[in-house]
Length: 258
Image 1: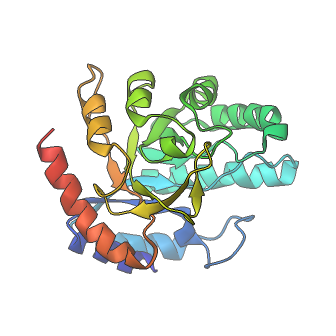
Image 2: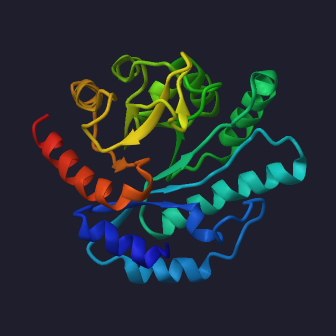
């Protein structure tokens, strides 16, 4: 989907901001092991922002790689994300640590801390997402975030994939710089798996097993709360358009009652 169509769709759904993924910078299916020219993309995005703003930029870095030339690419992805964020007034760039196996977790953690820490920007926040299993618990996310000096992207649904209660995480973690909302439902052949072996599939917001309302309430009742972008990240396949339209309406209604 071109960025112009993405922004038009988001606006038609009632969203007031979008999270711009670096997937828009690459051709579909291409391995993102290089840094593309984003001048055309940036021009198209500027033309597409009519009544909607860029709330965050997201990059798909992965410091599981150890080769110096690949590390340079992963760093450049983040630096480009910071540049795009600055150009379009977004204060947050969502980043990742690494997607290692348990065998290379220590080395990957060290690389993530070292590289994220040295890329930190004075005027934009790197928001580290809780993503994956190896680095998916509050303690693991905090170890990297504190070590690198980054903020947090708090993905409510992702905590379930690491076997963590999202409400508990909301009380343990620093207040996030970006919040992601998604829902899951138990499914025999779902594409996602929790540590206890249960399978999960994406669900419309409010129709699954993720305690979204309780988690948002726990976050908003904190004394250190502040205004941050809240974005949908749905996993509903062919029903993604419908899920997004209904999800934005559901989320607006939910937030108005908290």
